[in-house]
Image 1 (cartoon, helix red, strand yellow):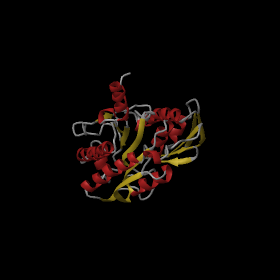
Image 2: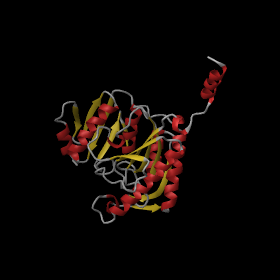
Image 3: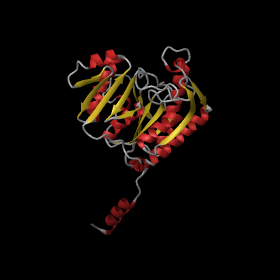
Image 4: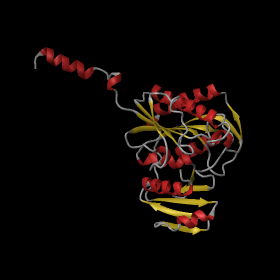
Length: 294
């Protein structure tokens, strides 16, 4: 190798990575609706409700704030998983054009479908507190008649989704919603970033923040969360994973107890033991569509 060639090789090795050659940094954003700023009742959050179309637009604008925050933190790819109701809520025409969208059911990994070990972080937008949490606005767990526990620990929807991401070694770094879900997920997942976009007063009452302020909190919080991803541990559930479902409706326990591998322990509770969280997630997706087919 002559001197000129050696100098060119040395120069190439010492050059910083350009924007086009930077390492991939993938972020998954899962979005629900009950935790979106302004939403307090089913009139806003249920398809067909008199205010639903307005609030699905506001939901999409909160998603866009999260997408922007992820890219500001260096993301090279952002995927949005529409995870509310029928999973057909995000307005694709209004969605930030840099993001890809997953929508519709069924899908094996539910609220974080698309997740795998290539992702660096997960962010939750518009999430809500679990069944029975007070004063959480629109607090419920999946169907509003269910308590979900993993290895004996009660979890909200966000905790269940975080455990699926944790199976791939991916941390949840951010949540937006009311103060109750922020407190609930921080207690479960550790010091994640949280944007409290409204203060819950009760199940159908909340003190809203100005919309632009809420979006700023989301954008800045996602940015900080993605930047801090190495400081936040994935939520890993020890194996095997024991899923406990306690239903308000005893008919569901009777139906599920007919399935191989499901054990009924009382009139309202069944247990399923999976080899890992992915096994549990696939089982629960079947339960989801028995209870609420789309």
